[in-house]
Length: 429
Ligand code: GLU
Image (cartoon, rainbow, N blue to C red; front, top):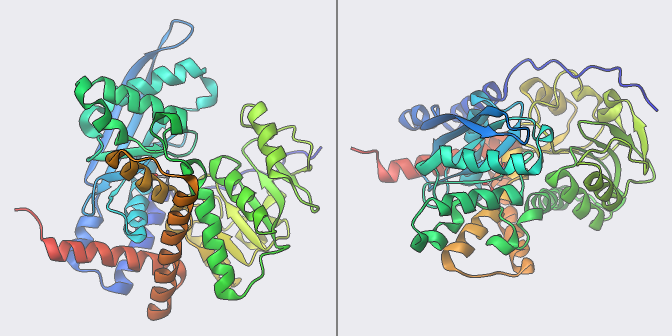
């Protein structure tokens, strides 16, 4: 078995610096109206809560949670909650800002927010996580709500956690409004008001984007090799849907280990292993374990980062052999990493477009709850695909018009929509 010698690359800048550099660059290119630029440069509200929870051993621990609401010009704040030890105010800020661009680009009636708890959930039992989640929801109080701010799953959170949030939020309201509050979160289990297909929406959307890229570039996806960083919800479903296109999964990395198999890794077997192993890939036998430092260099056509931010940097971008980088994660590529990839001629489908299938799915869940309807998975996936196709087309068009890359193209479409809204509406008073 390989020894894990290579250290993780040093993080030069946080995600907040990255998102602000991207924003400044795009605002310059499209000459964003100066007043709108000032508004979008700041977050509207930043909430930090400290709340106590009794652990299984009887001790009390105080946790810190965050919710940053960046902008709600287009509709209620929307964005996930992540449970991770990298969660802090700066991370929540950056991720909230990316959500504003993502929902604007997707043409949804939502603004942008993000939050979470500074925690490693692997250190807590299921019943502790339930109490932590319920108490966090209670601490957020009326700062969230179905027409105000609607959380969703993100890194290390899932449908079960959303169900606890919905139940806690509704339980603190009058019983007569219980069902009027169901859509305070999206990404719920289907039995608790969730949307059929929301679980796979992000990965499905990543692949819908990759199909658009292949069509535009005249690439046949059959036999194309891909690598995936992160094997959570986004990584697994992306692999699942790319296999349906005839692609071959040749390498996977998670926090615990990295794997390579040139004959192809079976994502279903990998998922089964990971579920039985506390969502860790360590010990998987369907591929050879490799040094984590060698992961990015595994020869491939498509590279899908689907884990955390700032993973592709000056320390490893040069090793990437893919022709396409499809950003399943939020902010996986830092400024220097991106410059290197661009020099190499790698196409990049930027996060705010690439992973937007998730929030598009959330929009349909919210609508389904509001209308008290129940939709079939086929209808849902078709609607998500349609919206991705539209966004992809708009981004490619803007990139062409302004002679910029797709990330800037995506920013321009999003910022233009926000600018139009402010120009039409003005500001209070
Ligand atoms: N956490 C996902 C994202 O980053 C989904 C957000 C949502 O559905 O509100 O886009």
